Image (cartoon, rainbow, N blue to C red; front, top):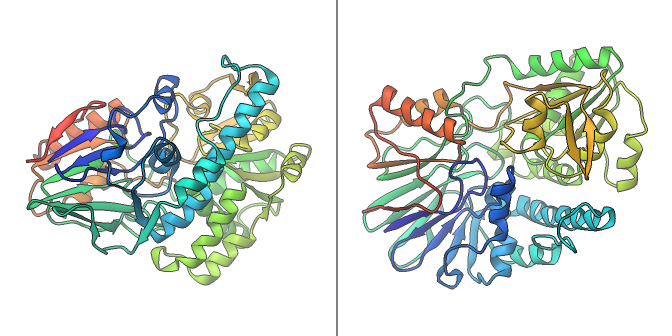
Length: 452
């Protein structure tokens, strides 16, 4: 058995792992690279594997850095099944066409404005490609056996990161291999904690926050402090938010704050059709999260849903105080870019990020203090206050990962640390060694590891 790291190494994006049992190779996750240009260029390069040999794909969850390469995989010849949880299937039906639509729109805009080096600029894949890929999805229940080959089977275990998020446990030739995917937090405001596991031979473990601990602050109180400060000065609060997971948490917290009178009664807008659709899916899968029926309703009703492009553009003509929650969470694309162009130049406004900002993204640049950001070929001054909700994250920090690892009866034979930028992954390695006495390593891009 052999494992090849086709992504998720040296970065938090592009997660792809080839599990080869010598009989029917399977791809674990199929994500897009995001952030730095040299990473994004990998999306345009052919995968260094024979797609005709890939029997199946198993997804941990629907986020684009884990699922967004699927349309290209199918376009380039993959013909097998894509196994995932039922909620992940429904979310992919929203996320993948949206990802394709954004790429088509950006290509059209680049050609119209003439700021692309490519003549013409082309999307990585189209909405038609995304819809074809969706036909390959094969939803399964958590803990339901998935037959990958005569020698290997897999099961999905709840990971607690977002709705439908799973760890993937593969059993093959007497070995147990666990892919953590994105590991959730034990006390997330919405999601239930990740499943505890007792024993595996190989562990592929995320390390997004391997060098950091989350703020101990109550996320509700931290959010209230930021909102009250900006709204009291008449500002517009723009919150770039991941459409699946983070947007729903923010709506829940804002509903609680508004219900308790802890923030001013101002207009609140959810400007992301994708987030609107995802929010409704939370009603269907209430067993996977902590929210009651009443809390789900409150989260759905606290904001005005903005669907049409015309209504989105009208928001940019309004004045504060008001709150706009819009995708994408790292300001890499989507409607939030137009809001940043409109509101980032005004000092009384607040740009409030709400999660991890990968290197090379506009979000990382703004949180890092950039005075300008490039949007649609223009440099936009950033005079608004910029902040990041330190206590709000869907990823376990290093201390929470260590606590989760303590459920293992013994050390896995191999621990491969992925889905982390270099400093974070190496710090996670040291934490595991110093706290548990276990050896682990950080694989390189395209590295192959024997699992026998």
